[in-house]
Image (cartoon, rainbow, N blue to C red; front, side, top):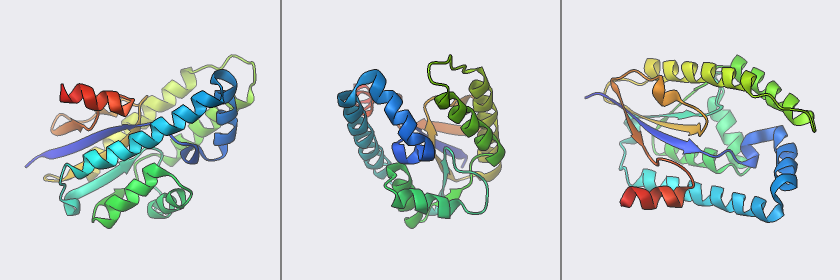
Length: 201
């Protein structure tokens, strides 16, 4: 029967960024202006509407679906985390809850220690106003996270099951997955409307 993974590139929302959101928002507005920020938020909203519609078109058997999420640690409290962020308005996590209610299984996806280290790195970078912000450290953590996520999917996705992976655009987990997992890219790139039109052509 084989294993299948639906790979979904995502843009993180303010809610996803937690305590870093305000400083990142200010930095974005300072660089691009309020109008661009509002356009950015609209694009994110369009993205999640489109993702949900396209997933619905897959007609998945949810009792054979496992859901993997960027930033969701393996901790035993995965559902609580998703519910908290969904209740705060996170569209990504609201969609996760819908999939779970349909019968999909939520799977802790990331190494908590790596998430904490990268969070601290980003926090330090946002605090260094005017300073040169290096990316090497974050790139290293990203590669480690990708390796962990790929291994986690390999260990938990069984024959005959379909995985749904929500993951930020900088990740390259698809390059680290075993060859027997067939990858189905829900959209090839962002913004979503362009991806949809190109996929139809």
